[in-house]
Length: 545
Ligand code: DGJ
Image (cartoon, rainbow, N blue to C red):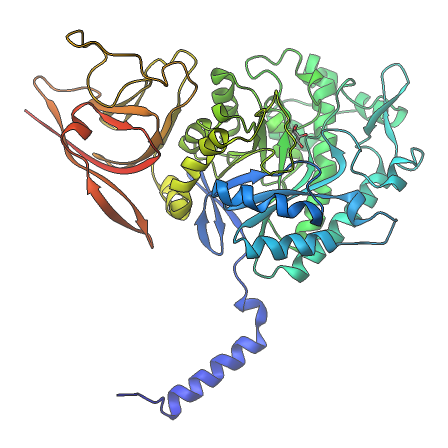
């Protein structure tokens, strides 16, 4: 029987239509947001939790002609977000004349490829230098002041004290955000990174007369307050770190000004990425992009740039302890962890798990396109099939559950692990359970078996393997990972207390609901959980006496 709407429903439908037409803004998708609670963070897109499985293209892939070399790599990777530069020189080649045709094309093609975008505003600073500023900026060093070195020579970096530079950059950025507001009501663009790896190499700050005067003056009261320190000059408050602190404050203020102006147009989350110094010592930190959001000046950046939602580490260090330390330094209650750039060599892929375990809202290997460029030794020599698969495997597993994972990680304790240099076991206590990750083992049998001859596992000496766990309840875990064995033991067993699996389900989420594919049992659970390919498991444990 066909039911026809009577007069009342028809009137309601008509009123609803009128309301929609009268309030188009209300019908728009909600803005991307970063939500923070109890020290955990979550990115939301379209009002839903979102985990950014990202990839960054090469630096000069920001032209329409290059895009056909981008999408096949992004698709093969199963990324849901692409980070792409938008260069000031490209949008404002002549002062006051703007050209957003690349952005228009990029957004169109991103939608066709069903991915979101993060725009990288390469402007006053790109890897500290002004290379992406328009020629009219680069050529006019009188109007657009460079830093002055201690010895009086002109430095290559545009000064954060250059008011004309700030005004010009801000104007262009606001135009960019206005254009985004106009063409992107559905928020294909989910975040913006104003500038790229800012700071200064080779001179810790600007020594121009104006900068020097500021340096000899007092530290701004709001900064001293935010750091809980007494007042005084920069040297008095920061001692040997004074030059770096001073440049951090002024660089962050400059960017905050630009971010605030952009957000007033369209309030998108914004973050700044950091070139990193040695994570184990502050010694020499001022020699690495001094003034950028390096780990030792995060607190200064937080005080100076409230419109910058977070600062983020670009991690190109293959050392396991260093990588983990960077993750720990940037995962803070006041700073969501995101890795906006990491090397695209296969060995970096396992750190995705470690990042997720620390609540990462996103992760992106760098140089992910088929333009033939390789930034080895930072990243891979070549994006060959094996390298691609190191990232694509985990992304393929996580892409369908990216929203579920973002929600779960926001609501539950998590732990992430990546194989270390010696392949040693790594453990974590979660509630009453001690979880241990083991590497380089066959799926069957125990490491100490001598009764049967066993060849070493092919991954023994390879930097692969990792997993992430979320504790869903006292005795229940959701876990994902690859190339490792996970074992569960009681952290403090009572006399005679034993452990058993109640259930180990392999599955996925479908519309937010867990769906089981099969149960693991027998050989598949007798020697711990052996994850050889990326897999998602839901595990319930019990103990008995
Ligand atoms: C970090 C920068 O942010 C990237 O744009 C790029 O230059 C890499 N370093 C090196 O390939």
